[in-house]
Amino acid sequence: MFELLKQIVSFDPSGLLGSGLQYIQLHFGTPGLIAAIILGLSIAALIVSKLLKIAFNILRYVVIPSMVVTFIATNFLPYSFVDVLPAAVALFAVALIVKG
Image (cartoon, rainbow, N blue to C red; front, side, top):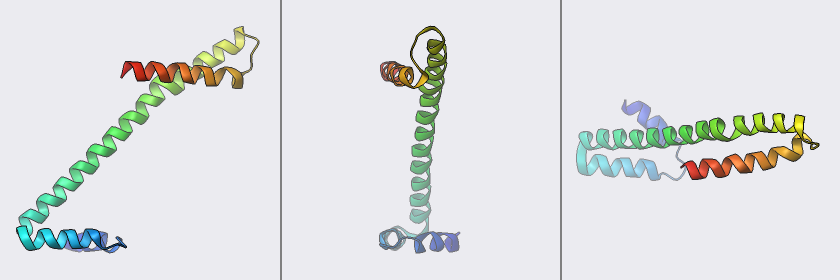
């Protein structure tokens, strides 16, 4: 595990990550280092999950409905697809913001 950690730290050009891990190792020992790694991984997983949720919500509530509405509107209105699409995207983006 520590070899993998050393490889990860070697990619940091500033050396901040390595010095931070050395500080934690020096003051809190191996259990503190393991706790810091678990904390960092859990925070990273939380951020990734929130970003995926945002991306999925944008796809589900903005992209797909605006494409469908634009396709339907081009059949009934004398406007082209590229003229209706920005208005539909804006409409559904506002709806997503209001939805929360």
